[in-house]
Image 1 (cartoon, one colour):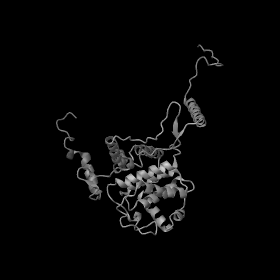
Image 2: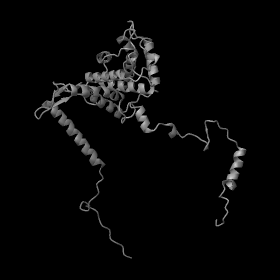
Image 3: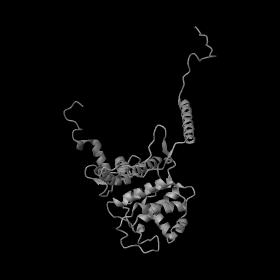
Length: 342
């Protein structure tokens, strides 16, 4: 160790490396050009390297991650800023003059909650989100399975400008309301429908545009009703609502929809809650107020009873989780033993 010359100075003179070279010559390894790196030699990619980082996954898949911003809320910001600027220049009130506000004597609340949303208001918000998707789309990327001219929903002739004219919010709302009222679907199903729609646009890298919005919405509703409702509506039932569509067409569209989603139909509770509150924000920015009712004595007593029940459950859980130590004052019946002196 104290010599001026050591065998470890030059790696080529190390006996371990020399023995290693002999072993490699006896057992050659066949590699492809993709597996060989100029610097590191044979390289096997770790599974973590093949996965997207968390930030990139959130940015590309907002329907999978609760912290990512929803696509429809981002697309609506341009119009919202223009409306605010126009109202400011024209000295107009941004809200409705008939909007009800709570006071010391009267409290107005709405029946729409994250667990039980209002059906009509939720459908209006979902239709408005789809309207902004179509209006502020980046391009017209689509697939043949969703093209209304190649797979028409009715026997009526498709207009020549069907792929150019953007549908109005009322038209989208009437189409969704007809399906929901005929199939007796819930408001929660409407929120899941929007989640699947944005997941499809992200995974398939396509846009919802005038030529495909009806079939995309129909496919999302079809899938959401089967995933969310215990007694799902069959494909043949939708054929009775839309008289001119066939069961084979519905089955094929459902199969393509699932394949484009990569069979990822899971909607976490956090993602569902994010979409619900973002829809409420969208409603406030576009003056779509939820129905308000004055808080009655009966409703106030019901809310108080629910709050008291939740408080009692919380107290029981907190008591069971606490570990209480025994005090010296409470040590009753413990006999002291005599010391043995040797």
